[in-house]
Image (cartoon, rainbow, N blue to C red; front, side):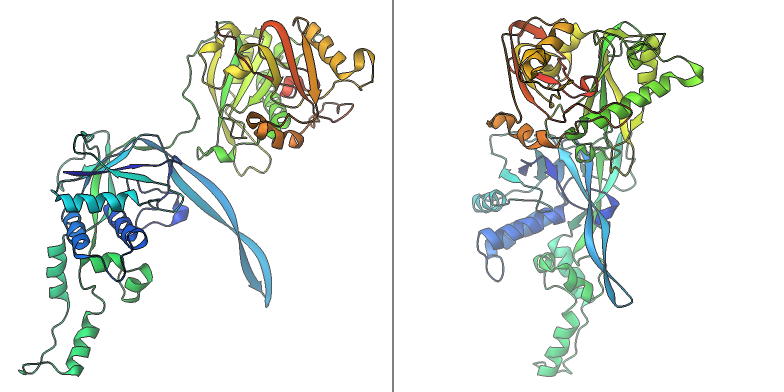
Length: 536
């Protein structure tokens, strides 16, 4: 047995199944035998410098691989896509008009696991060396975005048991499985027999040698039929379509049995955490996802403030249904409609856990805790919107607990809800009052006063700048900081000065997050992250 192993460094595999258009949003997974063998041929021409045709050793190798369909070990993957509006030109009354057309770019999000392709054939040492060279020179498989690192499984390595195998006609598929059609070559001898039967014979009228005219007629009759299987695999689409073929000569669609969950469509970025029912909680985590599961369609982190306002309005609206009075931890007002003091009511904090520049989760935090009424309203929240979005964004309850238990939450959360002596801005801090050159209304004075009002200890040091310092781990924020929306648009007053500050705060002892200060701090502005985590 020979096994090819493929890894995808970018985590993506792009390929459209045979017979489907790219905008249908389907992905061929695993890569079909026809695609794999054509990729090996391409590697020979581009990397091993074959000229007009493959050498005899390569022909023998590839024909051996064409003799029977392979089996696969296929790791799990999830379906994702992005949308592009490509410019096109239209003409109306002789005048060129600008227009756009929607193009879907669909791919499989593959893990770090490897795709293995098994052929039940025996190769000579020369053939193994040649196949190894062809595979190692492949730099993509499918579309050019599918960066690939290929190798040949070593003789001492055990192959993974195949989970995608050709389906025997007439046998049941079985529970948990589905059928997929993959393009594969027919066996070389079957192709040769088929060509002989299809190409019409030209009579030479009993003469020993056919005339030049007869030879030309014979050539014309055989033109639609590639001379052999490898020649058929090298024809491009326009050539075989010229002769009226609906699929390449020498190809066949082979049905494979594949586990049903091999290519999943995921709605939430992370699995749901433990459901705490209606026990007392003061931190709730919501997961945000697009309909397609593509994180590139999520709102930019620069829209932290308006996204938080939208979510807050929706929560209050749901809590007010059937004439109910919304809970004060959501409204920030007591029963007499007076504002609460001490910043104890809910903070709506959009966060970017994977640090790709898009909001993927929302932390809801209230020092006074969330009542049963508030939790029910939050649980009923199923969707939200973003500016420029074509469809709603999905919301899912990912976890709810007490602040002291958030150390068990997903990786990436600890920088917001962790404990540290050193904190710095995750989102810009906007001063709540006009800045003055001295006294309590300097920027540092306002920060120290708010820390005291929120129950934090006196800091050792407070430093601020208009942009983050230039260093590697701050490059993303350096480019995004000046683009953050810094004024409320849904009923709140604008800040005295729309300046976003990058702030570092150092304490003598570790303090627990979340740490939020300044204007609109209940809606994600002025949010800080841990720099050095204090481990328990």
